Image (cartoon, rainbow, N blue to C red; front, side, top):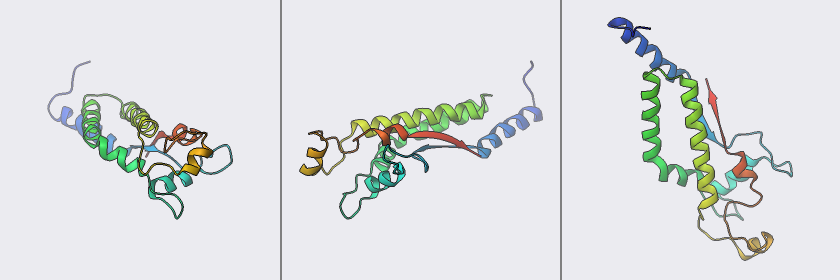
Amino acid sequence: MAKPRGMGAINALKRRLSSLEAVHVDYGLFAGDENNEGREIVDYAFVHEFGSERVPARPFNRMAFDSQRAAIVQECAAVAGRVLGGASTDAVLQQLGRERAQKLQEFVRQTQIAPALAPSTVKKKGGRTDTLVDTGAMVAAIKHKLSR
């Protein structure tokens, strides 16, 4: 099939660009996912992120974003380029969402965010000192979704 020329090419690019305005990808934790005790995962993720009277803030989401900001900007530019090149907007954003969710999962698993756990918490966790992973339910619940 011949490539559009002139105004046809410009109109094709406009359609592709508008497809990026019509849909976006979110990644992280979403309401509705529960742990094995029936507690919403976003509730305790919120406590980890912002802290509470008893739990110090360990802002994993903000730290992950801040540490990966340059890569995210490059990935978004690549998405725009692929869509302008004719790739499916949904397919490109699904791939971006999957990759971003995986990177957030890796960050949570691999990063020890200060402050260290209290000795009583370490004891409850059987001697483990990882600050954000207990049962793994929060990490497993990190995913992506497209929204229109």
